Amino acid sequence: MIEIFDKLEAYLRFDFVRNALIVGVLIALCSSLLGVTLVLKRFSFIGDGLSHVAFGAMSVAAVVGLTEQMALVLPVTVACAIILLAGGQRSKLKGDAAIAMISVGALAVGYLLQNVFSTSANVSGDVCSTLFGSTSILTLSKGDVWTCLILSALVLAVFVVFYNKIFAVTFDESFSQATGIRAKAYNLMIAVVIAVIIVLAMNLVGSLLVSALIIFPALSAMRLFKSFRGVVICSAIISVVCALVGILISIVASTPVGSTVVVTDLVVFAVFSIIGSIKR
Image (tube, rainbow, N blue to C red; front, side, top):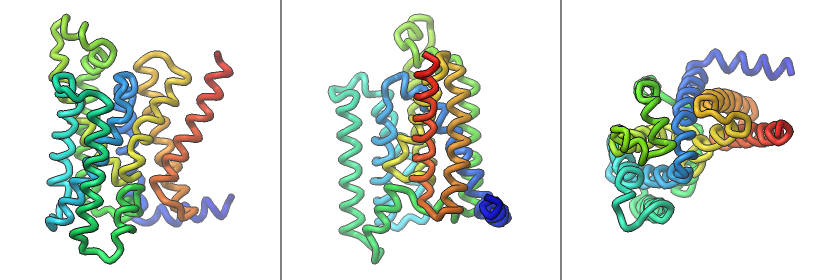
C-alpha cells in the first residue's frame, strides 16, 4: 500500500497527470448535472446517439484534414441534439427511433470514412481508441485544458442560473408552459448543453462509454435520495469521486482510462443499490 501511494505521489509531480485530473473532474461534474434531467425525461440513450454523431463528425474532420476538430464536431453535435430534443416532438420519427437511426447512421458513416479515406496505418486501433477512450486524456495541451475549463464553466453557470427552470421543465413540461415558462426554449438550451458535455466526455471515456458517465451517477444517487436537489448533489459527488479514483487507478495499474472510470461508476451503483435495498 505504501508503494502505491509513493507511486501516485511521483506521478502527481507531472503536469500531464494534474491536467488529466483537472479535466476529468470537470467533465465528470458537468456530466452528472444534466444526467439527472436526462434520466427523468427518459432520454437516457441520448448520450449514445450524440456520441456516435460526434464520432462521425470527427471522422469527417480527419478526412478533410482539420487540425482543430472541435470546430466541426461541436456544431454538428449541437445541431443533432437540437433535432432530437427540441424538434423531436414535431417530427414523424420520435424518441428512441430517431436516436437509434442517427446513432447507427453516424457510426456507420464515420467508420466507412475512416476506412476508405484513411491516412493512418492502424485504422482499427484509431477507431477502437475513439470508441472506447484512449490515453489522450494524459496528453492534453494547455489549450485543451483551457477549452475544457471555459466550456465547463459555461455549463455550470447555465445549470446554476436556470436551475429552477430546468427543474420545472424536467418534471412537467406541459404545466411549465401553462405557467408562462418557455419550455421549448429551455429544451433547446438543455440540448445544447448536453451536446457540449458529450463532446467533452469523449476525451475521457470514448464514444461508446459516454452514456455511462452521464447516467450511472444519477441512477446511483436515486437509490438513496428522492428530492431533485439531493439527487443532483449526490450525483455530482459520486461522479467526481469515481472520475478521480478511476483515473488514478488507470495510471497506477496501466488500464484504459475510460473503462476504468466506468467500472468504478458501476461498482458504486451496485453498492448504492444494496444500501437502498437495505434501507427500504
